[in-house]
Length: 70
Image 1 (cartoon, rainbow, N blue to C red):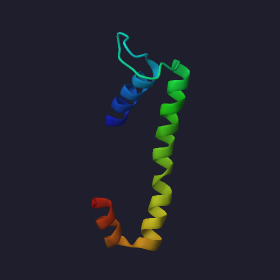
Image 2 (image 1 turned 120 degrees about the vertical axis):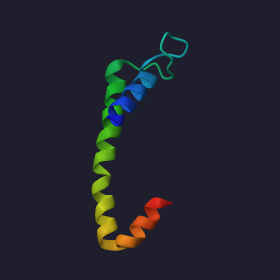
Image 3 (image 1 turned 60 degrees about the horizontal axis):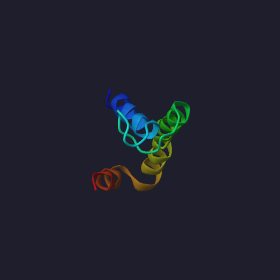
Image 4 (image 1 turned 180 degrees about the horizontal axis):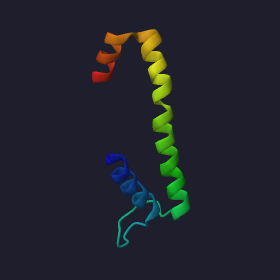
């Protein structure tokens, strides 16, 4: 639920121009803003797989918990 809320904010931030009714920064078109947000979501989902492999094979259970807490 939080991801959907944040993606809407990020997409509006990328899509709208500064000084408009809805404030933004870059003034990209809707398609470009949607592509950027979708790439960020896909990257966040796929980055968990290599992180899990590193955590399980190289770091171990306790070091992973300590590093992720920092």
